[in-house]
Length: 377
Image (cartoon, rainbow, N blue to C red):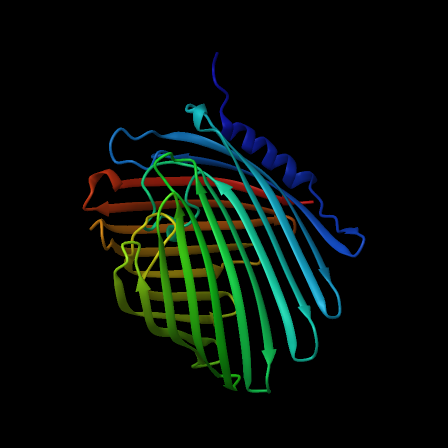
């Protein structure tokens, strides 16, 4: 039996949607509700993230999503959920279902006090960004993540403020040789705002990460965070400090860290960001300390009233301290979007990523080309 061509289905649905789709505002109780659906057709020349004997395939991804928002005088709640079905043309054994859920809540207890909670859950079978891929375990496997955070903020005066926060992260994997990762973190931030152009904060963070099965590592970090507006459109974020780490093998380390990001809104149609980070830290993939530096930049440009383009670059160089594994990742992604209607958006994107390593089993290169259509109902 001859297999159907997924791109034919995409073209038909795109044409029908552009002609017929309309957006509707839904009100359910006190919530504003939006529904959406999307279809993406992709060609991936390395679906298994390996160097030798690569597999390539066409992938059809169908997604449905819902967003609900409530805004009161002193509190607000935002919810979003989506389900994504990935269907492979040839390697149907890789068919998968991805899920996402996010909840954000904020409550102003008084004029000077507020609390905020957030919970994010996702399940997928591939990295969704260059940051996710950097330092990760090689190969294709399913990842479930849940990140919860709670915070309390107190405005002491018009210039000073205090924030306390707690977060928990759980990462579980389908790979039999991969241990599940758990993270608990506590933090304090004391902020000073000199003016609308300059602010400075002192930070302390305690993190405890453990694996099941496996050991644990502890990190205490002291740092300073500053934001300065150099012009009305150009601003700089800088973070620096020192981390005191107790590794999984009970050795102690003292490591400085640094982060710099520059954002420039060149005009009302163009925005660019460049960032650089250097740090030693734990991550969710290995019971080892990961020392790395990474650089990224992103540029978005509105071409016309309906069309916009985006470009992102990423480079990371990292080394696991005990295992002496060193990876370098380079990635680039280009995208073009067009709004057929206020509620109908089409997109084209192409991306390339490559990992070079001192262990050949971790190396791979891949190209990904996609065409997509998103409709809001």
